[in-house]
Structure formats: C-alpha cells, structure tokens
Image (cartoon, rainbow, N blue to C red):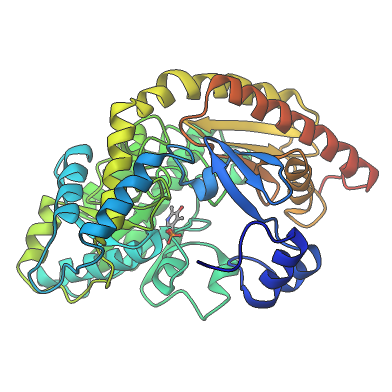
Length: 464
Ligand SMILES: *Cc1c(COP(=O)(O)O)cnc(C)c1O
C-alpha cells in the first residue's frame, strides 16, 4: 500500500504538498506559506480534517456531492465493476453494460426528446464536445459558416481551452490567449450588480434582448448556438429575473439557434427539479452534465443531445471522443447515484423540505448590516455583501477583499462557504437536514458578524 497516510503530522503532509502538488485555481506560492487544509475523511454533510476538526461542507465539494459523503453503495458498485470489467472503450463499434444502462437512464430522466448521451470525463471536456458537436451539426446541414457560439460574460463553462473560451471570465481568458475564435459574449442577467435604476423585470428582458442584438450583429446565418447555465454557479449564484428565460427561448426559436444548457451544477436535483432547465422553463437541444451525475464519487460528464441534433450527427463519423468516454466504473457509480437520488426521493426532499427551509433562514440573513440581497433557488444560494443596501453600492476596496475576509471567518467557524468577489455562496449536499441547515445558518451568521467587525476595524466599510 501507499506509504503516505492520514497519520503523518499535518505539517509534514503540508510540506510534501507544497513541494510537489500544483493546486488548481490557487496561488501556490501563497499557499506554501499557509499550508493547505488536509481533508482526511467525510460523512454526510461533514468533512473531517487532519486536525480532527469537523467541517460542515456547504459547497458539497465543488457543487457535486449531491447525495452526501460516505455512501457505501457507491464504493461497493465501483469495486464490483472494477473486478468484472475495469475498462473497455466505446470507440470502434464496441460497448458495455454500464455505458448502455446509464445512457438509457439519462434519456429517461432528461426532459423531452433529450435521448442521446455522449460521454466525457467532466464538465469542461463535455463543453469541448459541445463546441465541436454544434459546429459539426451545422456543417452537416450544409451551413459550415454557422460556427459562432454566443455565451455570457461571467459564465463558467470549465477550464479546458474550449471550456475557458465558452466561459466569460476575463481573468481566465487572460491566461493562454483565449477565447478561441468564434465565441461571442453578451452581458449577464445580474440585476444587483448591473441593473442600475431598472426594475429586475425590465432588466431581465433587456439582458435577454442582447442575445437578439448579438445575433443580428454577427448575422443569424453565422450563429450556431447559445450556451448558458440555467443559474450561473461559479459566477456567484446569479439567478436571472423571471422575464429573462422566456425571452431567451423565444429568440433561440426565432433564429433557429441551438440552445445548450450547461447543467453541470443545476442538474440532478440542485434547483428542486431533476434539471435546472425545468426550473427556468427552457427546452435545450443539448445539456452539459457532470458533477452531481456521480455525486463526485467518480469523474464523469457528458452531453445529453436531442433527437434532432443526434439524427444529423448520426449521418457522419464524429471524429471525437475520450479514452475514458463512458468509463465502466464511472458509469456504474453514476447509475447507483441516480438510483439513490430516485429511490430516496432526494429531489422531492430538496423541493418540499430542504429548499423552503433554507430559503426562510437564508433570507433572514438580510437583516445583517453588511448583507444586501439574498438569493436562492433550490439548494444554491448567494448573498451580496455591501456597505449600503439602499444604493446596492460596492465596497471601495478591491472586489473580493471583504468576501475573502468573510470566507476566512467562515472557514474558521468550520463552515465551507465560498466567496465570488464580495458575494457569498453556498450549495450544500442535497441530503442536508433541517437540523443541519440550522447549524449552517448559525455558523454563517457568526461568520458575518466576525467579518463585519474586521471590515470596520480595517476601515473597509466604505462605499466605492
Ligand atoms: C464545474 C463546471 C464545469 C466544469 O466541469 P469540470 O468537471 O470541472 O470540468 C462546467 N460548467 C459548469 C456550469 C460548471 O459549474
């Protein structure tokens, strides 16, 4: 067995980590000084670290551990599948039972005629698949010039070259000369930060109509698809005003633009329905899936494709795929995860119990002197930190300064709550109980109180 174990002293693990492990989305130099927090085990909604602290994981890992940690059934299924058939590919006219069974299950769960699954290893590479897929679709239909994909500023669609390009995060574009050609952006429906004097309803419509303006600017005969998350996750849990999505759907239909819903976070119960598209009332042609598909127990993602797109692609050879597309162990784990979500009625639990309860408690934080809007759909929620609730002002300090202080307080109180700029976000495991929600809120409020004192003491409670 491996000689590095949980039993080494924390400082020793941190030193080895700093010497050899390059962390994603991390300034490694800075982390070296501080030492990474070492997580050793987990159960339900709680993580345990190498110092024996129990941490309430209100982010479900990276928005993925939907059924919670420590479910033996998934471990058992993985072990069984590894013994029976650890690997075989699905290239060159072969297949295997886990890939077949999972595709059938996904076709059953996905709405409408989203009946066809192309497997990837996660969300980023699934979105890379989508870029090639929608461009190939139009090329096969005799319109190869239709290759522009429209996305949104501050969207997150992954961190591969394709995923980063589709995403609208300028800081990411700056590393690696991205986006690739043929990606266009419109503004996000983020009323709190960008809505000015408009009402949320007016603003939602205005932002949706930017899609029509962009299509006309590029030329309708050049646009292949529009991609969006039903609820922006990594961008800060941005929930669009009610007027937004019906208008987006109308515009996609009018110009015959393919609609890609990136369901990597919203899928598999997060918003109180199986898919976020159902919650916001859209009919996508393609859905990107990952994360909650396996509750993070094994890496797997994919694209669920409707009959129309699948039929066109079936007419050609799509020269695309990953060695681990439809990996049997990951498929078996995902299938077991979906069985648990279904049989334990976890989507119902979100919709009928956990989400309404969390909503009430989350909104109660709005009375805090540093909290502006509180937003929630299903079990994903955000709140704006602000020095002035009335004017929705930003802080004078660099964006994220106050958010980071609040995050540090939260981590200190054994609550994993993230910050995006000066917005705090949570997305706990879907199995969270009302008693656990009480603990979450208690720790969140305590963290806000501590952060508020620090922010004032440092002279940061100042409007931009
Ligand atoms: C996390 C995420 C991705 C990327 O998925 P990976 O599995 O990290 O590659 C893509 N889209 C959305 C909406 C995500 O939240």
